[in-house]
Amino acid sequence: MTTSAQTLIAPARAKTAAGTATLRRKQGFQHGGWFVAPFLTLFALFVIWPLLRGVYLSFTDANISGDSANFVGLDNYREALDDPLVWNTLGHSAYFTLLVVPCITVLAFFLAMLAHHIERGKWLWRLCFFAPFLLPSTVAANLWQWLFNPGTGMINHVFGLDTPWLTDKSYAMLAVVICTLWWTVGFSFLLYLAALQGIPDHLYEAAKLDGANAWHRMVHITLPMLRTITGLVITLQILASLQVFDQAVVMLDFMPGPEESTRTFVQYTLEQGFTSYRVGYASAISIIFFVIIASVAVARMWLLRKREEGVR
Image (cartoon, rainbow, N blue to C red; front, side, top):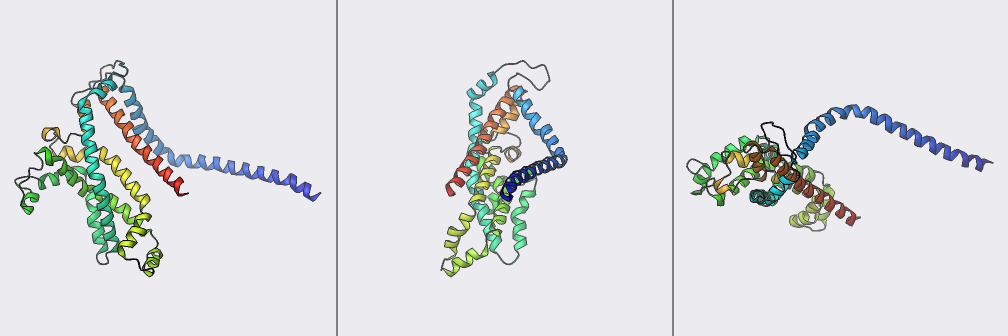
C-alpha cells in the first residue's frame, strides 16, 4: 500500500515542482524584461533598424539628396564585386590587420607580464600602459602626425632619420600601424593583466619545487592558462583592425595617403556615400563588409567550440 501511494505521489510532486519552476521563470522574465527594455529599445533603434535600412538601400539607387530611390536589384553588388577600388581598399585593411594583430598581441602580453611581476611602482606602470587608450582617436592621430612630421617631428630628430613617414607609400601605412599600437595596446594589456591575476599561485610554486625556471613556467603554465584570453584578444583585434578609419584619415589630413596607400575599406565606403552621394552603392559595399566581419566572428566561435570539444 505504501509503495503504491509513493508511486502515485512522486509524479504529482515532480509535476508540481516543474510547474512552480516554469512559473518562476515566467515571473523572472516579466520582471527582468523591464530592466533590459531600455537597452533593447536603443539597440533596435540604433543597430537593428539602420542595418535593415541599409540592406534595403543596397538594392536601390538612393542618393544623399533624398530623391525617390528606384529598385535596381543586385546591380550595386555586381558593381562592387567588379570595382577594383573595393578590392584594393579591402587589401589595405587586410594588410593593416596583418601588421597590427600579431604585434599588439605580443606587445600586450609582455607589458602585462612586466606590470604583473614588477614590485615597485606597479600602479604607475599600469597607468602608463593603459592611459593612451583613454585618448580620443583624433588626439592620438594628431599627436603622431606631429611626431612623424619630417621637418619638426621628434621621431626623425631623435633617431637621426630622414624618413618621409607620411608622404611615401612605403612608410605611410607603417606610421598608421605604429600610432595604432601605441594608442590601442592598453585594452589588450588590461585583458592580459586580469587573466594573469587569475592564475593560481600554487601552480608556480609547485613548478619551482620541481626545478622549473622562469622560461619553463611561462611556457608550460602561463601561456596555456592564457590560451582563451589570447584567442579573445586576437579576435577583437582582427574585428577592430579591419574597421580601421579614424587614425588613418586624420594622420593623412583626410586624404587617401600617398598613391592612395592608406585608403581603407571604411574610408572608401564613406567616400561613395558622402562624397559621390551614392548611398545605395555605399550601402551595398557596407553590407559586403558586414558579411566579411560576421564571417570572421562566426569562424572564431566555430574554432573555439571545436577546441573545447577536443579538450573534452
